[in-house]
Amino acid sequence: MPAVASLRVAIVGSGPAAFFTAEPLLGRTDYAVTVDMFERLPAPFGLVRFGVAPDHQKIKSVTRSFDKVARRPGFRFFGNVDVGTHVTLDELRRHYHVVCFATGAQTDRRLGIPGEDLARSHPATEFVAWYNGHPDFRDIVFDLSVKRVAVIGVGNVAVDVARILSRTPAELACTDIADYAEAALAASGIREVYLLGRRGPVQAAFTTPEVRELGELAGADVVVPAEDVALDPLSRAALAAADDRALEKKVEVLQEFSTRQRSGKPRTLTLRFLVSPVEMRADDAGGVRALRLVRNRLEDDGRGGTRAVPTDRTEELPVDLVFRSVGYRGTPIPGLPFDERAGTVPHDRGRVVAGGAPMPGVYVSGWIKRGPSGVIGTNKPDAAETVESILADAAAGRLPTPSSPEAEAIARLVRTRQPQAVGYDDWLRIDAAEVTRGAACGRPRVKCTTLVEYLAAART
Ligand code: NAP
Image 1 (spheres, protein in one colour):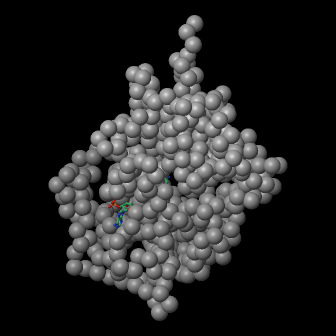
Image 2 (cartoon, helix red, strand yellow):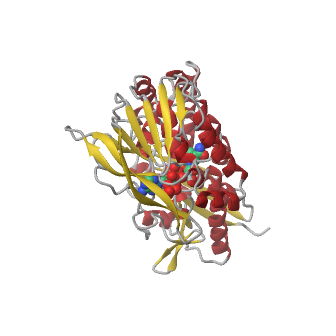
Image 3 (cartoon, helix red, strand yellow):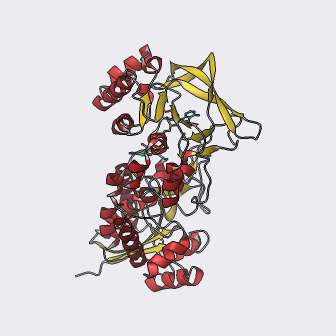
Protein backbone atom coordinates (compact mmCIF):
# COMPACT_ATOMS: atom_id res chain seq x y z
CA MET A 1 0.00 0.00 0.00
CA PRO A 2 1.41 3.44 -0.85
CA ALA A 3 2.23 5.56 2.20
CA VAL A 4 -0.36 8.30 2.75
CA ALA A 5 1.03 11.79 2.63
CA SER A 6 0.98 13.72 5.87
CA LEU A 7 -0.97 16.96 6.19
CA ARG A 8 -0.11 19.09 9.19
CA VAL A 9 -2.76 21.70 9.95
CA ALA A 10 -2.75 24.55 12.47
CA ILE A 11 -6.14 26.10 13.25
CA VAL A 12 -6.14 29.40 15.11
CA GLY A 13 -9.26 29.79 17.27
CA SER A 14 -11.42 27.07 18.81
CA GLY A 15 -15.02 28.12 18.23
CA PRO A 16 -17.55 26.47 15.92
CA ALA A 17 -15.74 27.50 12.72
CA ALA A 18 -12.49 25.97 14.04
CA PHE A 19 -14.12 22.64 14.98
CA PHE A 20 -16.17 22.47 11.78
CA THR A 21 -12.87 22.91 9.88
CA ALA A 22 -11.01 20.31 11.95
CA GLU A 23 -13.74 17.64 11.77
CA PRO A 24 -13.71 16.81 8.03
CA LEU A 25 -9.92 17.06 7.88
CA LEU A 26 -9.45 14.56 10.70
CA GLY A 27 -11.87 12.21 8.96
CA ARG A 28 -9.69 11.88 5.83
CA THR A 29 -8.11 8.56 5.00
CA ASP A 30 -6.13 9.74 1.96
CA TYR A 31 -3.89 11.90 4.16
CA ALA A 32 -2.45 11.36 7.62
CA VAL A 33 -3.95 14.57 8.99
CA THR A 34 -2.89 16.13 12.27
CA VAL A 35 -4.68 19.22 13.58
CA ASP A 36 -3.20 21.49 16.25
CA MET A 37 -5.70 24.06 17.52
CA PHE A 38 -4.33 27.28 19.04
CA GLU A 39 -6.57 29.26 21.39
CA ARG A 40 -5.77 32.51 23.18
CA LEU A 41 -8.05 31.64 26.13
CA PRO A 42 -7.51 28.77 28.56
CA ALA A 43 -10.76 27.09 27.40
CA PRO A 44 -12.03 25.96 23.98
CA PHE A 45 -15.31 26.61 22.11
CA GLY A 46 -15.14 30.37 21.50
CA LEU A 47 -18.54 32.02 21.25
CA VAL A 48 -20.35 28.84 22.32
CA ARG A 49 -18.78 29.26 25.75
CA PHE A 50 -18.34 33.05 25.81
CA GLY A 51 -21.15 34.30 23.51
CA VAL A 52 -24.20 32.01 23.64
CA ALA A 53 -26.46 33.19 26.45
CA PRO A 54 -26.25 31.20 29.71
CA ASP A 55 -30.01 30.57 29.68
CA HIS A 56 -29.67 28.86 26.26
CA GLN A 57 -28.00 25.65 27.44
CA LYS A 58 -29.48 23.57 24.62
CA ILE A 59 -27.53 25.61 22.06
CA LYS A 60 -24.36 25.05 24.08
CA SER A 61 -24.78 21.27 23.84
CA VAL A 62 -23.10 21.45 20.40
CA THR A 63 -19.84 21.30 22.37
CA ARG A 64 -20.44 17.54 22.79
CA SER A 65 -19.78 17.04 19.09
CA PHE A 66 -16.73 19.34 19.28
CA ASP A 67 -15.46 17.22 22.15
CA LYS A 68 -15.72 14.10 19.96
CA VAL A 69 -13.57 15.84 17.35
CA ALA A 70 -11.02 16.81 19.99
CA ARG A 71 -10.70 13.19 21.16
CA ARG A 72 -9.82 11.92 17.69
CA PRO A 73 -6.26 10.74 17.09
CA GLY A 74 -4.20 13.48 15.48
CA PHE A 75 -5.84 16.37 17.42
CA ARG A 76 -3.99 18.58 19.91
CA PHE A 77 -5.16 21.70 21.75
CA PHE A 78 -2.87 24.55 22.73
CA GLY A 79 -4.97 26.79 24.97
CA ASN A 80 -3.76 29.98 26.65
CA VAL A 81 -1.48 30.42 23.63
CA ASP A 82 -1.78 33.63 21.66
CA VAL A 83 -0.77 33.47 18.00
CA GLY A 84 1.04 36.75 17.47
CA THR A 85 2.47 36.81 21.03
CA HIS A 86 3.67 33.31 21.95
CA VAL A 87 4.08 32.06 18.40
CA THR A 88 4.04 34.02 15.15
CA LEU A 89 2.35 33.30 11.83
CA ASP A 90 5.77 32.83 10.21
CA GLU A 91 6.66 30.24 12.84
CA LEU A 92 3.39 28.41 12.26
CA ARG A 93 4.08 28.39 8.53
CA ARG A 94 7.45 26.77 9.21
CA HIS A 95 5.76 23.95 11.16
CA TYR A 96 2.58 23.28 9.17
CA HIS A 97 1.41 22.76 5.60
CA VAL A 98 -1.76 24.68 6.43
CA VAL A 99 -2.55 27.53 8.81
CA CYS A 100 -6.27 28.34 9.03
CA PHE A 101 -7.55 31.34 10.99
CA ALA A 102 -10.98 30.87 12.58
CA THR A 103 -10.65 33.77 14.99
CA GLY A 104 -14.15 35.19 14.60
CA ALA A 105 -15.06 38.86 15.03
CA GLN A 106 -13.36 40.19 18.14
CA THR A 107 -14.87 43.63 18.53
CA ASP A 108 -18.05 45.64 18.02
CA ARG A 109 -19.36 47.95 15.30
CA ARG A 110 -19.72 51.64 16.18
CA LEU A 111 -22.83 53.80 15.88
CA GLY A 112 -20.93 56.97 15.06
CA ILE A 113 -23.21 59.32 17.04
CA PRO A 114 -22.33 62.07 19.55
CA GLY A 115 -22.13 60.81 23.11
CA GLU A 116 -21.42 57.21 22.12
CA ASP A 117 -18.48 57.04 24.54
CA LEU A 118 -20.23 58.54 27.57
CA ALA A 119 -20.06 56.64 30.84
CA ARG A 120 -22.72 53.90 31.02
CA SER A 121 -22.72 53.44 27.21
CA HIS A 122 -21.22 50.02 26.44
CA PRO A 123 -20.84 47.68 23.51
CA ALA A 124 -23.25 44.77 24.01
CA THR A 125 -20.40 42.42 23.06
CA GLU A 126 -18.61 43.41 26.31
CA PHE A 127 -21.69 42.78 28.44
CA VAL A 128 -22.16 39.37 26.78
CA ALA A 129 -18.52 38.45 27.44
CA TRP A 130 -18.88 39.70 31.04
CA TYR A 131 -21.95 37.65 31.95
CA ASN A 132 -20.39 34.62 30.28
CA GLY A 133 -17.29 34.83 32.49
CA HIS A 134 -14.76 35.81 29.81
CA PRO A 135 -11.49 36.39 31.71
CA ASP A 136 -10.70 39.60 29.76
CA PHE A 137 -14.10 41.17 30.54
CA ARG A 138 -14.90 39.92 34.05
CA ASP A 139 -13.63 43.10 35.72
CA ILE A 140 -15.71 45.58 33.71
CA VAL A 141 -18.20 47.37 35.91
CA PHE A 142 -21.73 47.88 34.54
CA ASP A 143 -23.88 50.19 36.61
CA LEU A 144 -26.98 48.06 37.07
CA SER A 145 -28.28 50.27 39.88
CA VAL A 146 -30.05 52.47 37.31
CA LYS A 147 -33.75 52.13 36.41
CA ARG A 148 -33.89 52.50 32.63
CA VAL A 149 -31.72 50.86 30.01
CA ALA A 150 -31.76 50.86 26.20
CA VAL A 151 -30.38 48.17 23.93
CA ILE A 152 -29.73 49.56 20.45
CA GLY A 153 -30.28 47.10 17.60
CA VAL A 154 -32.71 44.25 17.13
CA GLY A 155 -30.45 41.30 16.32
CA ASN A 156 -30.26 38.13 18.41
CA VAL A 157 -27.45 39.59 20.54
CA ALA A 158 -29.66 42.56 21.46
CA VAL A 159 -32.43 40.10 22.37
CA ASP A 160 -30.01 38.08 24.52
CA VAL A 161 -28.90 41.22 26.38
CA ALA A 162 -32.46 42.48 26.90
CA ARG A 163 -33.58 39.05 28.11
CA ILE A 164 -30.68 38.58 30.54
CA LEU A 165 -31.35 42.08 31.96
CA SER A 166 -35.02 41.15 32.39
CA ARG A 167 -34.60 37.70 33.94
CA THR A 168 -35.43 37.11 37.60
CA PRO A 169 -32.71 35.80 39.94
CA ALA A 170 -34.54 32.44 40.02
CA GLU A 171 -34.44 32.23 36.20
CA LEU A 172 -30.69 32.89 36.18
CA ALA A 173 -29.87 30.68 39.14
CA CYS A 174 -30.14 27.47 37.09
CA THR A 175 -27.82 28.68 34.29
CA ASP A 176 -24.03 28.78 33.94
CA ILE A 177 -23.91 32.59 34.13
CA ALA A 178 -20.72 33.83 35.81
CA ASP A 179 -21.11 33.99 39.60
CA TYR A 180 -20.31 37.70 39.82
CA ALA A 181 -22.81 38.50 37.03
CA GLU A 182 -25.52 36.48 38.75
CA ALA A 183 -24.95 38.47 41.95
CA ALA A 184 -24.86 41.84 40.14
CA LEU A 185 -28.04 41.08 38.18
CA ALA A 186 -29.83 39.86 41.31
CA ALA A 187 -29.13 43.27 42.88
CA SER A 188 -30.07 45.17 39.71
CA GLY A 189 -32.36 48.20 40.00
CA ILE A 190 -33.38 48.01 36.33
CA ARG A 191 -37.13 48.32 35.81
CA GLU A 192 -37.47 49.33 32.15
CA VAL A 193 -35.61 47.79 29.24
CA TYR A 194 -36.00 49.19 25.70
CA LEU A 195 -35.01 47.35 22.53
CA LEU A 196 -34.66 49.82 19.65
CA GLY A 197 -34.86 48.85 15.97
CA ARG A 198 -34.14 51.37 13.24
CA ARG A 199 -36.31 49.55 10.67
CA GLY A 200 -39.63 47.72 11.03
CA PRO A 201 -40.64 44.29 12.35
CA VAL A 202 -40.35 42.67 8.90
CA GLN A 203 -36.72 43.79 8.68
CA ALA A 204 -35.75 42.91 12.27
CA ALA A 205 -32.68 40.66 12.39
CA PHE A 206 -33.76 38.61 15.43
CA THR A 207 -35.27 35.19 14.82
CA THR A 208 -38.78 34.04 15.74
CA PRO A 209 -38.07 31.67 18.67
CA GLU A 210 -35.81 34.27 20.27
CA VAL A 211 -38.42 37.04 20.11
CA ARG A 212 -41.22 34.71 21.22
CA GLU A 213 -39.21 33.95 24.36
CA LEU A 214 -39.43 37.64 25.32
CA GLY A 215 -43.16 37.18 25.84
CA GLU A 216 -42.60 34.37 28.35
CA LEU A 217 -40.41 36.07 30.96
CA ALA A 218 -41.37 35.48 34.58
CA GLY A 219 -40.56 38.98 35.78
CA ALA A 220 -41.10 41.28 32.80
CA ASP A 221 -44.13 42.34 30.80
CA VAL A 222 -43.44 42.76 27.10
CA VAL A 223 -44.75 45.99 25.54
CA VAL A 224 -44.88 46.90 21.85
CA PRO A 225 -46.52 50.15 20.65
CA ALA A 226 -49.14 49.28 18.02
CA GLU A 227 -47.88 52.12 15.81
CA ASP A 228 -44.45 50.47 15.63
CA VAL A 229 -45.69 47.13 14.33
CA ALA A 230 -48.30 48.42 11.86
CA LEU A 231 -46.78 47.48 8.50
CA ASP A 232 -46.18 50.14 5.86
CA PRO A 233 -46.85 49.24 2.18
CA LEU A 234 -43.15 48.38 1.56
CA SER A 235 -43.05 45.97 4.49
CA ARG A 236 -46.36 44.38 3.49
CA ALA A 237 -45.03 43.81 -0.03
CA ALA A 238 -41.72 42.44 1.31
CA LEU A 239 -43.56 40.04 3.63
CA ALA A 240 -45.79 38.77 0.82
CA ALA A 241 -42.84 38.41 -1.58
CA ALA A 242 -40.73 36.56 0.99
CA ASP A 243 -43.32 33.78 1.33
CA ASP A 244 -41.53 32.80 4.53
CA ARG A 245 -43.59 31.22 7.32
CA ALA A 246 -41.00 32.00 10.00
CA LEU A 247 -41.00 35.67 9.04
CA GLU A 248 -44.82 35.81 9.03
CA LYS A 249 -44.78 34.17 12.48
CA LYS A 250 -42.28 36.75 13.75
CA VAL A 251 -44.55 39.60 12.68
CA GLU A 252 -47.56 37.84 14.22
CA VAL A 253 -45.72 37.39 17.51
CA LEU A 254 -44.83 41.10 17.61
CA GLN A 255 -48.34 42.17 16.68
CA GLU A 256 -49.75 39.91 19.41
CA PHE A 257 -47.34 41.54 21.90
CA SER A 258 -48.82 44.91 20.90
CA THR A 259 -52.27 43.79 22.07
CA ARG A 260 -51.13 42.68 25.53
CA GLN A 261 -52.06 44.46 28.72
CA ARG A 262 -49.41 44.87 31.39
CA SER A 263 -49.85 42.26 34.10
CA GLY A 264 -47.94 44.09 36.82
CA LYS A 265 -44.65 42.20 36.60
CA PRO A 266 -41.81 44.17 38.19
CA ARG A 267 -40.12 44.99 34.87
CA THR A 268 -41.24 46.07 31.43
CA LEU A 269 -39.43 45.17 28.24
CA THR A 270 -40.47 47.53 25.45
CA LEU A 271 -39.71 46.78 21.80
CA ARG A 272 -39.64 49.84 19.56
CA PHE A 273 -39.27 49.97 15.79
CA LEU A 274 -38.53 52.68 13.22
CA VAL A 275 -36.40 54.73 15.62
CA SER A 276 -32.69 55.58 15.40
CA PRO A 277 -30.59 57.07 18.17
CA VAL A 278 -28.93 60.23 16.89
CA GLU A 279 -27.32 61.41 20.12
CA MET A 280 -26.61 60.23 23.66
CA ARG A 281 -27.19 63.03 26.16
CA ALA A 282 -25.09 63.40 29.28
CA ASP A 283 -25.89 64.19 32.89
CA ASP A 284 -23.66 66.54 34.88
CA ALA A 285 -21.28 63.72 35.78
CA GLY A 286 -20.75 62.71 32.14
CA GLY A 287 -22.97 59.63 32.16
CA VAL A 288 -25.83 58.82 29.80
CA ARG A 289 -29.14 60.35 30.88
CA ALA A 290 -31.14 60.12 27.63
CA LEU A 291 -31.15 59.06 24.01
CA ARG A 292 -32.34 61.45 21.36
CA LEU A 293 -34.28 59.35 18.86
CA VAL A 294 -35.45 60.18 15.38
CA ARG A 295 -38.49 58.50 13.90
CA ASN A 296 -37.73 56.73 10.59
CA ARG A 297 -39.74 55.78 7.57
CA LEU A 298 -38.81 53.00 5.18
CA GLU A 299 -37.61 53.46 1.63
CA ASP A 300 -36.66 51.04 -1.14
CA ASP A 301 -32.86 50.91 -1.21
CA GLY A 302 -32.78 50.09 -4.94
CA ARG A 303 -31.04 46.77 -4.22
CA GLY A 304 -34.08 44.72 -3.29
CA GLY A 305 -33.92 45.83 0.35
CA THR A 306 -35.33 48.53 2.58
CA ARG A 307 -33.50 51.36 4.31
CA ALA A 308 -34.46 53.59 7.21
CA VAL A 309 -34.77 57.27 6.34
CA PRO A 310 -35.08 59.84 9.15
CA THR A 311 -38.22 61.97 9.37
CA ASP A 312 -38.44 65.28 11.24
CA ARG A 313 -40.08 63.61 14.27
CA THR A 314 -37.74 63.35 17.23
CA GLU A 315 -38.12 62.41 20.89
CA GLU A 316 -35.99 62.07 23.98
CA LEU A 317 -35.98 58.69 25.71
CA PRO A 318 -34.73 58.94 29.30
CA VAL A 319 -32.31 56.05 29.90
CA ASP A 320 -29.29 55.83 32.19
CA LEU A 321 -27.54 52.85 30.65
CA VAL A 322 -27.06 51.91 26.99
CA PHE A 323 -25.89 48.74 25.28
CA ARG A 324 -24.96 49.21 21.63
CA SER A 325 -25.78 45.96 19.86
CA VAL A 326 -25.29 46.77 16.19
CA GLY A 327 -23.08 43.83 15.23
CA TYR A 328 -19.66 42.35 15.86
CA ARG A 329 -16.63 43.32 13.78
CA GLY A 330 -13.47 41.40 12.82
CA THR A 331 -10.06 42.82 13.73
CA PRO A 332 -6.87 42.69 11.61
CA ILE A 333 -4.55 39.70 12.03
CA PRO A 334 -0.83 40.56 11.95
CA GLY A 335 0.68 39.31 8.69
CA LEU A 336 -2.64 38.98 6.85
CA PRO A 337 -4.40 41.46 4.55
CA PHE A 338 -7.58 43.04 5.93
CA ASP A 339 -10.69 44.54 4.37
CA GLU A 340 -11.39 47.50 6.69
CA ARG A 341 -14.85 48.13 5.29
CA ALA A 342 -16.09 44.57 5.78
CA GLY A 343 -13.95 43.79 8.84
CA THR A 344 -12.87 40.50 7.23
CA VAL A 345 -9.78 38.91 5.66
CA PRO A 346 -9.97 38.90 1.84
CA HIS A 347 -10.18 35.34 0.52
CA ASP A 348 -11.12 33.15 -2.40
CA ARG A 349 -13.21 30.23 -1.16
CA GLY A 350 -11.26 30.31 2.10
CA ARG A 351 -7.79 30.89 0.57
CA VAL A 352 -6.36 34.14 1.98
CA VAL A 353 -5.68 36.51 -0.93
CA ALA A 354 -2.88 39.09 -0.63
CA GLY A 355 -2.01 41.46 -3.47
CA GLY A 356 -4.32 39.59 -5.85
CA ALA A 357 -2.77 36.14 -5.26
CA PRO A 358 -3.47 33.39 -2.72
CA MET A 359 -1.04 33.20 0.22
CA PRO A 360 0.15 29.58 -0.05
CA GLY A 361 -1.04 27.44 2.86
CA VAL A 362 -3.01 30.22 4.64
CA TYR A 363 -6.80 30.01 4.97
CA VAL A 364 -9.75 31.49 6.85
CA SER A 365 -13.01 30.05 8.14
CA GLY A 366 -16.08 31.45 9.94
CA TRP A 367 -16.77 35.09 10.87
CA ILE A 368 -13.28 36.38 10.01
CA LYS A 369 -13.96 35.00 6.51
CA ARG A 370 -17.60 35.93 5.83
CA GLY A 371 -18.43 38.50 8.55
CA PRO A 372 -20.48 38.13 11.75
CA SER A 373 -23.66 36.54 10.45
CA GLY A 374 -25.62 33.34 10.80
CA VAL A 375 -26.12 30.79 13.55
CA ILE A 376 -23.59 28.21 14.78
CA GLY A 377 -24.58 25.73 12.04
CA THR A 378 -23.91 28.31 9.31
CA ASN A 379 -20.21 27.75 10.01
CA LYS A 380 -20.41 24.15 8.84
CA PRO A 381 -20.86 24.77 5.08
CA ASP A 382 -18.55 27.78 5.40
CA ALA A 383 -15.82 25.54 6.87
CA ALA A 384 -16.53 22.81 4.30
CA GLU A 385 -15.73 25.29 1.53
CA THR A 386 -12.38 26.13 3.16
CA VAL A 387 -11.58 22.43 3.64
CA GLU A 388 -12.39 21.79 -0.02
CA SER A 389 -9.86 24.49 -1.01
CA ILE A 390 -7.24 23.03 1.35
CA LEU A 391 -7.66 19.54 -0.10
CA ALA A 392 -7.66 20.81 -3.70
CA ASP A 393 -4.42 22.71 -3.00
CA ALA A 394 -2.91 19.63 -1.34
CA ALA A 395 -3.83 17.44 -4.33
CA ALA A 396 -2.43 19.99 -6.78
CA GLY A 397 0.86 20.30 -4.88
CA ARG A 398 0.17 23.96 -4.06
CA LEU A 399 0.87 23.67 -0.32
CA PRO A 400 4.28 24.80 0.91
CA THR A 401 6.48 22.19 2.59
CA PRO A 402 7.11 23.05 6.26
CA SER A 403 10.77 23.25 7.16
CA SER A 404 10.16 21.86 10.66
CA PRO A 405 7.32 19.36 10.39
CA GLU A 406 7.94 17.26 13.54
CA ALA A 407 4.95 17.38 15.89
CA GLU A 408 7.22 17.64 18.94
CA ALA A 409 9.11 20.68 17.56
CA ILE A 410 6.13 23.06 17.76
CA ALA A 411 5.03 21.61 21.11
CA ARG A 412 8.52 22.33 22.46
CA LEU A 413 8.48 25.86 21.08
CA VAL A 414 5.07 26.55 22.63
CA ARG A 415 6.15 25.17 26.01
CA THR A 416 9.21 27.42 25.97
CA ARG A 417 7.19 30.52 25.14
CA GLN A 418 4.11 29.72 27.23
CA PRO A 419 4.79 27.29 30.10
CA GLN A 420 1.14 27.74 31.16
CA ALA A 421 -0.29 26.36 27.92
CA VAL A 422 -3.49 24.37 28.47
CA GLY A 423 -3.81 21.04 26.66
CA TYR A 424 -7.05 19.20 25.93
CA ASP A 425 -6.56 16.88 28.93
CA ASP A 426 -6.17 19.98 31.09
CA TRP A 427 -9.41 21.31 29.63
CA LEU A 428 -11.19 18.03 30.46
CA ARG A 429 -10.10 18.45 34.09
CA ILE A 430 -11.27 22.10 34.08
CA ASP A 431 -14.59 21.04 32.58
CA ALA A 432 -15.05 18.28 35.17
CA ALA A 433 -14.22 20.68 38.02
CA GLU A 434 -16.74 23.25 36.72
CA VAL A 435 -19.47 20.63 36.30
CA THR A 436 -18.82 19.22 39.79
CA ARG A 437 -19.05 22.68 41.32
CA GLY A 438 -22.30 23.27 39.39
CA ALA A 439 -23.85 19.96 40.49
CA ALA A 440 -23.45 21.02 44.10
CA CYS A 441 -25.83 23.95 43.51
CA GLY A 442 -28.14 22.67 40.75
CA ARG A 443 -26.41 24.44 37.88
CA PRO A 444 -24.95 23.04 34.63
CA ARG A 445 -21.52 24.29 35.73
CA VAL A 446 -19.86 27.04 37.74
CA LYS A 447 -17.35 28.61 35.38
CA CYS A 448 -13.74 29.48 36.07
CA THR A 449 -13.35 33.13 35.21
CA THR A 450 -9.69 33.91 35.97
CA LEU A 451 -6.51 32.35 34.64
CA VAL A 452 -5.53 31.39 38.18
CA GLU A 453 -8.80 29.46 38.60
CA TYR A 454 -8.35 27.76 35.24
CA LEU A 455 -4.80 26.66 36.00
CA ALA A 456 -5.76 25.42 39.47
CA ALA A 457 -8.67 23.40 38.02
CA ALA A 458 -6.37 21.99 35.30
CA ARG A 459 -4.12 20.63 38.04
CA THR A 460 -6.91 18.92 40.03
P1 NAP B 1 -27.12 41.27 13.61
O1 NAP B 1 -28.01 40.09 13.54
O2 NAP B 1 -26.38 41.65 12.39
O3 NAP B 1 -28.01 42.50 14.12
C1 NAP B 1 -27.49 43.79 14.17
C2 NAP B 1 -28.62 44.76 14.46
O4 NAP B 1 -28.05 46.06 14.59
C3 NAP B 1 -29.68 44.86 13.38
O5 NAP B 1 -30.93 45.02 13.97
C4 NAP B 1 -29.27 46.14 12.63
O6 NAP B 1 -30.31 46.80 11.99
C5 NAP B 1 -28.80 46.97 13.80
N1 NAP B 1 -27.97 48.09 13.40
C6 NAP B 1 -26.84 48.09 12.66
N2 NAP B 1 -26.36 49.34 12.54
C7 NAP B 1 -27.21 50.15 13.21
C8 NAP B 1 -27.27 51.53 13.44
N3 NAP B 1 -26.32 52.36 12.97
N4 NAP B 1 -28.31 52.04 14.16
C9 NAP B 1 -29.25 51.22 14.66
N5 NAP B 1 -29.26 49.89 14.47
C10 NAP B 1 -28.25 49.37 13.75
O7 NAP B 1 -25.98 41.09 14.72
P2 NAP B 1 -25.95 40.45 16.18
O8 NAP B 1 -27.21 40.63 16.89
O9 NAP B 1 -24.69 40.98 16.76
O10 NAP B 1 -25.76 38.89 15.89
C11 NAP B 1 -24.64 38.38 15.18
C12 NAP B 1 -24.98 37.00 14.64
O11 NAP B 1 -25.04 36.06 15.72
C13 NAP B 1 -26.33 36.97 13.95
O12 NAP B 1 -26.26 36.15 12.82
C14 NAP B 1 -27.22 36.36 15.02
O13 NAP B 1 -28.37 35.72 14.51
C15 NAP B 1 -26.28 35.39 15.69
N6 NAP B 1 -26.77 35.09 17.04
C16 NAP B 1 -27.65 34.06 17.17
C17 NAP B 1 -28.21 33.79 18.40
C18 NAP B 1 -29.21 32.69 18.51
O14 NAP B 1 -29.37 31.90 17.59
N7 NAP B 1 -29.95 32.59 19.61
C19 NAP B 1 -27.85 34.54 19.52
C20 NAP B 1 -26.94 35.59 19.37
C21 NAP B 1 -26.41 35.85 18.11
P3 NAP B 1 -30.47 46.73 10.38
O15 NAP B 1 -31.00 45.36 10.11
O16 NAP B 1 -31.38 47.82 10.07
O17 NAP B 1 -29.07 46.90 9.80
